[in-house]
Image: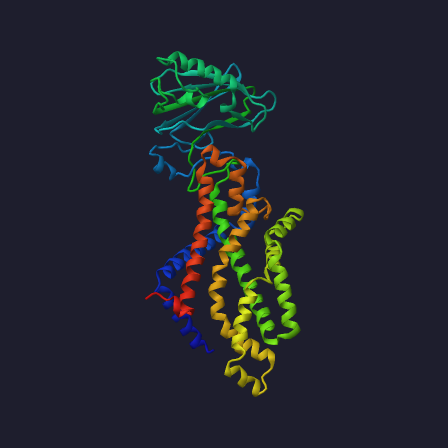
Length: 467
């Protein structure tokens, strides 16, 4: 076929696709998925994605744990809190740092102030320290001020290292102290538990309500030597984060959602394309040559059809920790002699008796020429819709193996997100977004290729065309 003829054929197919609603929907979704894949590969290179996803929790320590996406606030009808980060290393109107000398010792005072106008309580409070000292570590007093109230002493704390962290929310003694203080302020006995976060942000109305307004925290640190330094960063963790939320390790789920797209498309398309082409060639050889060749191929196909495909794949994945491309190779090998061989062979048996094939034999065309130039081009159009429609099956297969913990352990994929969600009781704890987001991406991919295959089937099979 000439280049002009090929372009005309592609334009004709595209024109036919756009004449069907399913074809339009499929093309729109596929363009979206391809755009996401290109954007992901450019903005988050593969090596960087692996480091970010497999890195320790310390990389994401300033992200809230198990935070819902920011758009989740629209569905619950509440202004859910976002994370507030205030650091004395960055000059800001909300952070004031003063240094003075008292009795030969250096005293550093850091005061944080922030507006809290959210409808729910924060999830955690942590203070990150950045200090240098030559002898004794700094000791400090930490104070807290609620809107319209006097300053309250929280705790005295001594650094354990120069980059120490004080997990305020994990201090049980402080929580008991705050709880007792709040109980004295409340008009009646509350019917809810007073956690540290609630105690620090609770309105004294007797109901579980946030006191909105301007809050302050003051840290007064005493350093033994004038050359010692002291800085601190206050992190008030919210309950929503980013466009996709976070998981139990504080990782942004958007990384795995984005990288899951090119992985799913490449895995599904490669497996479907190679498997379909190999099955087509094997079926053509079987139908054309017949005899012992046909008999051997058909017996092998029947054996493959009765073998339990998924258990074999699970067994291989369980015993050998394989990466995504080895897994792809195994899937292709186990799928070569599938049921598609028998369907394609039936088409070959019909085509081999056509007059133009008999004419080719008469002028001495070789078997190879007849197979690849006369038979395969004829059976290719009916195979293409099936090839496209089988892509979601391979995408779901990779996701299923990752969900079972048998996929590539290093890649951030949709199946891995669902596996982590179920392992950490996401649905039981109400973290529905953790499961719904990757599931939605899987369904979107399946719909795209299913609609495209359905539209192509209408094009190559006139009996299915819409009236």
